[in-house]
Length: 278
Image (cartoon, rainbow, N blue to C red; front, top):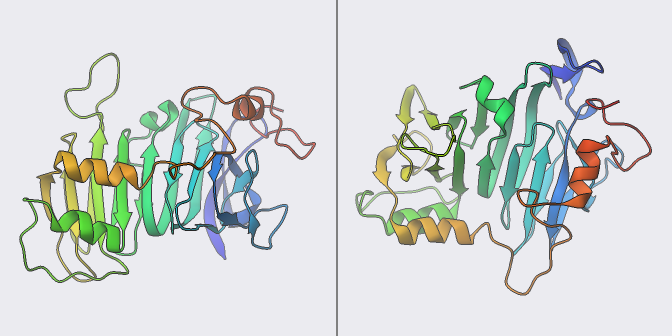
């Protein structure tokens, strides 16, 4: 599929390319793989089992199985995690290391996800977005979680802020949660916010701990409402490693030698140098 995209230039300049094949740009690396994760890549366009340190490119199809987790670390250190039975794709990535600025576009067709923005993304507030089948989430430097499908309905049904008796679509129902940091961010953390567009309406959510629920196509968003502790925990559980499962990689948020090698030495695992660090 052909899209208008931004690409990464060898010297770090931000250059626009029209009509570029989406799969041509390397945007990150698999940092952790748990259980059954399958994807297509530039090097191997056939669907195959994902491995740690494998490059992720624009347009790659990524799908997880039951009780599975994938964590992707993008070139700007943005972390994106998906739980079991998820389908995702990176549609857009803009990164200018000279300006320390970036922007990301992701599509999530189903499953649970967590987006933790890297510092360069904060220089382009509102330029990054996550799309679900029925909503678009504009991100202004923060931690966003969500679920699409039956898990979204299950969690929302138990929330006091969601009126009873709603009719939801089990394929597209979307729960969107601003985990933080919020307006009261401390310790040098930048306060974050999201703008959720559903149909012609856009709702801004700036308070950490607030959520929105969109039951289905053509329906208005419910909220914002404060997600309960049990609801927050239920969403987090969808993104944790399956009990007893061993990950092929440590969390990059702590330390992951595989990921450090990829970013700091420009080693992409295929004998080529990373375009950001030639």
